Each structure stands twice: as C-alpha cells, then as structure tokens.
Amino acid sequence: MKKEILATSVVLGLTALALQARNKPLETVKYVELKKYLGTWFEIAAFPQSFEKGRSCASATYGLNTDGTLIVKNRCIRNNKLKITEGRAFVSDNTNAKLEVQFYWPFRGKYWIIDLARDYSYAVVGHPNRNYLWILSRRPTLDEQTYNQLVVNAANKGFDVRQLVKTEQIADVSSI
Image 1 (tube, one colour):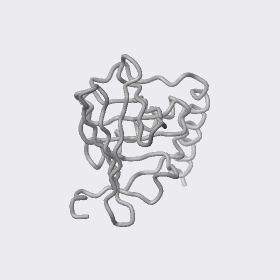
Image 2 (cartoon, helix red, strand yellow; image 1 turned 30 degrees about the vertical axis):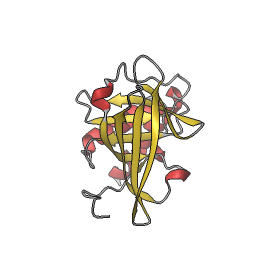
Image 3 (cartoon, rainbow, N blue to C red; image 1 turned 120 degrees about the vertical axis):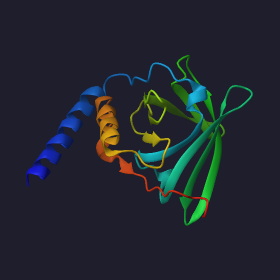
Image 4 (cartoon, rainbow, N blue to C red; image 1 turned 90 degrees about the vertical axis):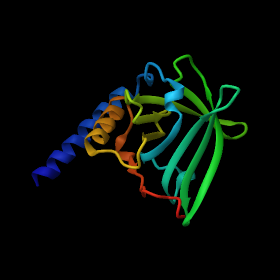
C-alpha cells in the first residue's frame, strides 16, 4: 500500500512540474557534436503515435550526407517483418540541437535534442509542442536509474511523462 501511495505521489508531482514548465519555451541542449551523434540509437520509450502503432525493436541510424544533411534510417519490426524507412534531417540552428526530419516531401517534423549524455550514450528528443518524446540509447536497454532520471528531466521540461510507453527491444534483429 505504501508503494502505491508513493508511486501516485510521484506521478502527481511530475504532472504538476510538467504543467508549470509547459508554458515555457522548450530548451534544448547547448550544443550537439554531430559526428558524435551519428550512428545507431535504440528507442527505449516514446509517446505512442499512430504512425508507429504495432511496432517493436525500433531504432534509428544517422549518417552524414555530403551536403551537410543527415541520412536517417528508421528500423522496426512490424508484423514479424523488418521495416526500414529512410529520410533526411536538416540542422536548423547553430547548436545542432534543433533538427527538422523529413521522411515524406514536403513534410518536416521538429526533432529537438533536449537531453544528451556527455559520452553520447543516451539522448532525449522532443518536439516544442511537447506532443512527441523519445528516449534513446546506444544500446537496446537503459538502466532504470538513468531512465527514471531522464523521465524526471522530461517532466521538468513540460512533457506529460504519463504518456511514455517503453519500447520492446530484442538483442538481435538480424534473424528477422
């Protein structure tokens, strides 16, 4: 019973923080070194979106195009099949923390890096309207302490973290 009361108190506290912060402009990290950001990121948790329904083992791999844009390859498993979607990301400010991602022309979505480990082992990406949020890691898993801290940080930035859903990951998707 005490655990349930504590859990409820934590959720209510995070909700109150999120509501206060929601009225402020969303802050990103101060700077992203793009070469360090390149590579594969595994989705640990996200706000559910209709275009992502029914998928698991989600990851994104970033590479650098010669024109300075980023190549984005999203992978996931849907209906027991590997699905790959390719797009591009455009840096939209001098911190490299604000990107615009495009999978279908002419539509672009805001991709703001709002939390980032010093060693680039995890990242949190959101949208300034706070309706999109992803917790990412270089590995398919993230320790609970780090995950919980990232959730608190996101709540402090105005995200309704009650919407977060952990993403199912498996160690080896090459067999699918």
